Image 1: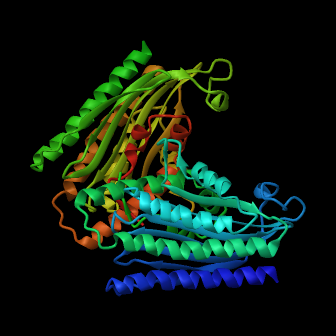
Image 2: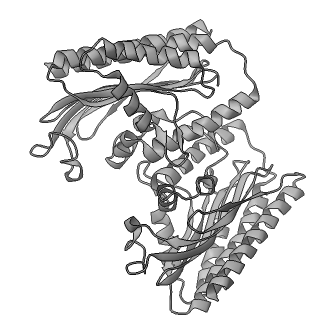
Image 3: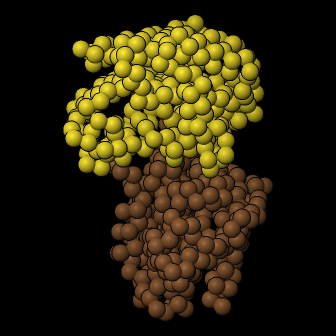
Amino acid sequence: MSKTQAEDWFRELQSTLIETYEAIEIAAGSNARFERQPWQRPGGGGGTMAVMRGEVFEKAGVNFSQVEGEFSERFRGEIPGTDEDPSFWACGVSVVVHPRSPMIPAVHFNTRHLVTQKSWFGGGADMTPVFPDDEDTNLFHSALKATCDAHPMADYQTYKSWCDRYFYLPHRQEPRGVGGIFFDQLNSGDWIGDFEFVKDVGRAFTSIYPQIVARHVDEPYEDRHRQAQLLKRGRYVEFNLVHDRGTRFGLETGGNTEAILMSLPPLASW
Amino acid sequence: MSKTQAEDWFRELQSTLIETYEAIEIAAGSNARFERQPWQRPGGGGGTMAVMRGEVFEKAGVNFSQVEGEFSERFRGEIPGTDEDPSFWACGVSVVVHPRSPMIPAVHFNTRHLVTQKSWFGGGADMTPVFPDDEDTNLFHSALKATCDAHPMADYQTYKSWCDRYFYLPHRQEPRGVGGIFFDQLNSGDWIGDFEFVKDVGRAFTSIYPQIVARHVDEPYEDRHRQAQLLKRGRYVEFNLVHDRGTRFGLETGGNTEAILMSLPPLASW
């Protein structure tokens, strides 16, 4: 029952995000639309990867997945609730947007529900501008703070610090972007309450990013800004391939490579 | 004494390769030259990273390094000859060339000498064309085979297979390129003989790659070839950041990030 509710929400959220980003392309006079590519997971389940290569959004990926099966020996015990029974069920939506304009921040969002012998939610959202803008950063952080503050189980400062620690490149000694929130293994004992929080994170993200895009979509820029963006995207690639646990876990466990690497930018330089 | 000989050779090889690639730029009417950037390693030693961003070679990196110090607890025992004494000395040259034209293969070369309580040589060379060409592949493999065949301690088939196994992307189920040779922990008991082999690998590489470049430098290409090259380079990035042991070891042990990531292409796409 709770699985079905979560799955329905994540499917709906994927559709909403796709419509939201397509509307921005339409408003910019672009014909670009998302291409949906369904995929099956050999061990059980699958998903729909949706990618748009547009004018405003040089590459936007919105991936829905619902997978299930059993963790291999190697990962049993590492994942909560798998000591005695390795079976799992997982469902979620992940989003990465790489805008064409270097004046518009890139963004990442993910929410998911995991069920083993335990059950929990995880997710977060963080923003990666090339040229950080205080007003953008405030808008983004404020939206996430308001969402956390409205739910008793969500502690904004904890989730914000978690995000800052996670999205950090030690080999460059620099953060990936300006942060946001990150949470995992959220189970307050109130499933409905936790689920409402996760839905509100999705709604807040859906609403706030287009506002930030709108602030910069008509802003002029020069080739040097584009070059800075391509270098910044190189750092993004470094983070995802070297440090991101989800990416490494996915590649090492034979996940869907195209869906996992959907996050990589359309063009990057070193 | 042997350390000095090896170091002298690696310095000479760096200079030779720099001159070789600059001569190709000059012949193409380009003013591009290598920029040499010396760097110090906090724990001891350092190197000179030389990078050229040219017309024929969109990005060519030729790095010399001579580092020494002690392996941290974590790596003791993993590296031969460090069980009782963690000190090490290492010297070598590594090269990565990303040509601008998608018709010219990218290439990678590395040779090094390691001294702990044991001592050995390692290295190799491999080529990554966007559009594999049998004649190029034969030229490259033949040069390396002739070099191995001239030295009794070097078994070409073993080194070729080692290269094929190493430069493979399991998550894509595809090889990085068309291979070459790869060898490590080479110590036949004849230091001078091993050193002569390593020098000949350097000479063979110095000689053969420009011949392959010359076969394609004036070949016309279209935007679709360039797009294929940028995608292929994305795979190159994936290999280096996800799988390459040298890269991961370097980043995890606080090596010189710029020198380690010199291998990444000037531009790549996903």
